[in-house]
Length: 215
Ligand code: GAR
Image (cartoon, rainbow, N blue to C red; front, side, top):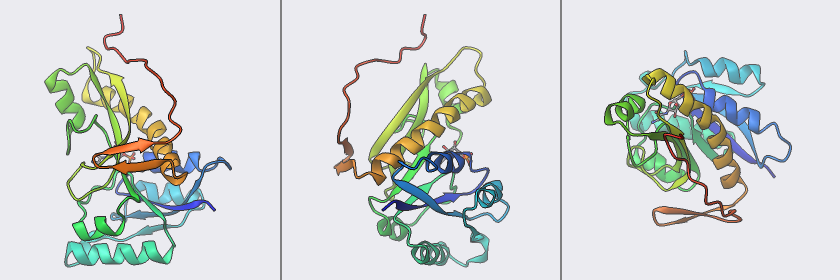
């Protein structure tokens, strides 16, 4: 039985689209059963509907409190028998109550090599610090923002001519590979949380390093 996944979005939903594409593989252990947005104007809603996936907008502004909004989300998720929640550019902070409901079953993708650059404007901040490697992280969601056991990371070089836009585009390309990989591992039961670490079964041992600059 494939795991039923909800992708939570707030905008264009390119990571959601990468999950939908990956799940088309009959061997992929999960299906994207629902797309949920806190913004009715999120472009990703239309993309999902074009793919034949149910897409629901719950405007957070229509709820008096964060808790009420989250209870409404939880109802929709339960009504669709969702097993796994993937935050895919979902730009609302979640309360500990909601996070607890999905403990070990909710993933987030963040455009930085966590624990560096939590929060916003990650590409600007990486450039300002002069780091030579930047990237993306998929992690389990815990109550702290952009915290939680790390499942997978992708590193990219930072090039001399980079702007936040070019660097962000290079990172985003990797996000689209990384999120399906992490979801596949979770849905296949290949992940074990061990304190701050995620242990991965059937890991192959590679020792290659990404060195930047690569001269
Ligand atoms: C992605 O780059 C994602 O990593 C980031 O928002 C973008 C959403 O793009 N998420 C965060 O910053 C969460 N802290 P998308 O809507 O095209 O997937």
